[in-house]
Length: 348
Image (cartoon, rainbow, N blue to C red; front, side):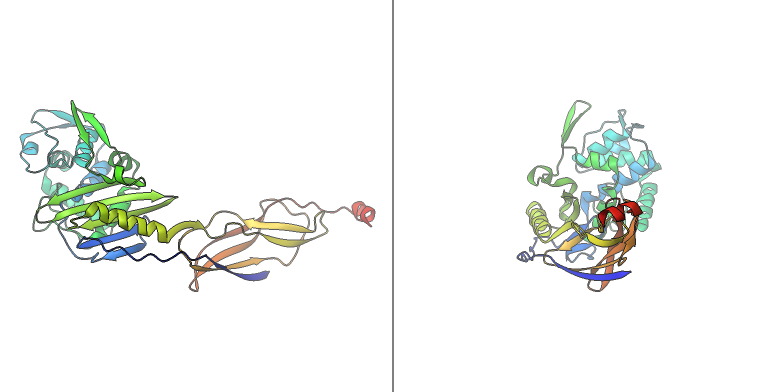
């Protein structure tokens, strides 16, 4: 087989200076875990009501959305933000999740914890088990609502891992992106202002206590590239997220590294002189502006007719910094029929 090495150089854009967020801790990652920006991302911190991301996903994975939940006085005695539950009422799990994610109801968090696990202590065990499963090694959960507690903390990096996982769940995505809803005669409006401030925002969760400061976890998606941003103890959190997303989307993009590539292979005894090989599929990669790519291609020096469309004829790999980061098969783009003896005589 012939082996060809091609050099592709992306036209560089001006490298924008990284933002300087107000947050004590911050991070931007891709949905598959690549870190694009970080600031004190592994520092343990209070996380306030962003805790409810974990409460929501643990509930979704352990209860059905249409299950009915009986509200007890224990649910109504929780301090802080509330969806104003009253003892003796009944709500569906979905309604309580909306109260949890939209208006950050601590009472909704308590009701869901009791429904799923029987006690807040048992529910915290489920939360910590999920954290271990997700590799949130610097996190500890003590309650479902996020009120300050000694053994209740996380990091920007861990919360980004959690949000990336949550956004893979269709039910969570739908609930988290809901701007407003009417439940039991009460209109709930999503506290996540980024849904209106930033067109690419598809979800998020706010949090605040005096000790934790302003906390925000959000997710945005543009042209197939999904990013997660987390800021902890951030006085200017909305603008922090906007600046970080603007920077990240301007410097990185999801692109097909083999787009437009094709290769001619001479055909012996064929009705056409050449057969064309093209990549079988896209090879989408997150690329920096101005990044240099090498394409390593292998295909035959010639091929005998007949050639069948869709048949494998070679391979193409994408090389960045000497490492193979992706690739696919090369397939023939069209049929090339065998040239029959009579046709050879006629052409002569």
